[in-house]
Image (spheres, rainbow, N blue to C red):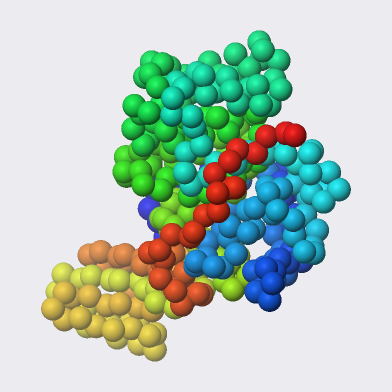
Length: 337
C-alpha cells in the first residue's frame, strides 16, 4: 500500500466518459489492437500502461479522433466517435509528450491563438486565458517569449493551452517526461485539481509511480490486448511477493510469535529479529496474523506489497525503461474543424 495516497476522485461518478468495445486496429499483417474494451467514468484518472509496441499510442490516436479503428464501437461523453467525430473533438483536448507551443510567442499570445482556433467569443477567450495564466502561475514570466521558458513552464503552458477550449476529457501523453521531481509533482497537483472540477484524464506514462499516485484505475496493454484492469491496489494484490513484516525486541518474543503463527508461510531472520509472513496485502490476511499474536510483543509491523513495477513485469515480461516512439500527430492539439 502507498502511504499518504491521495485519490483524485471526488464523490459519486456521473456516468461514462469513454467506452470502447471490441476495438481493433491493424497495419498490414500486424495486429496492433485486438479486441480492446474500456470503461472510463467521468471525473476520474485512467492510466494506460504497456511496453513499447503494445498499442498505447494507437489507442490514444483512435479515441482522440486522430485515426480510425478497423472495427469496434467507441463513445466519448455519449457521442458516437464514428458517427459524430466533430462532437467528440469539441469535448476533448490532447497534450502530447512534447510541448506544442510556439516558442516565439509569449504565453498570452499562445493562449489567444488557441482561443481563435476554438472559435471562441473574443471576450470569453480573453477571460479564460487570463484565468489560466493565473491558475498555472504564468502571469508574470509568461510575458516573455516561450523560447526563454524552463521545461516545467513549457509543460504548464502546454496544458493550459489544452484547457482553453474547456474540454471535459483530456488525453495526457506522458505529460511529465523530462521534468525534475519537483515540477513533476506540481503537475500532479494540477491534474488532481482538474479532476476535482469534473474533468476526465486519460493518462499514458512511463513513470509507474505517476500512475500509482494519480490513477483511479489502470489498464495494462500487452500485444494489443488488455491483460489486466483495476485499481492500483487491486493489481498489486494479483502479484505474489507481498508480506507482513514483524520485528521483535528479543529472541524470546520472536520465537513465541513463530510458534503462534505456525502453519502460515513465513521466514525467520534472527539477525534482525524479524518474521516475514507471506500476504496478499488484504485486511483479512493482516487480521489473521494479528489474531494469533500478542500484539504487545510486536515492536514494529510493516505491510509490504508488490509495486507497479512488479505488476508490469509480471504481466508483460518487459522492461519499462524505454519510451514509446511517438508519431508527430500526437504532438498536435485537437481542435474543432
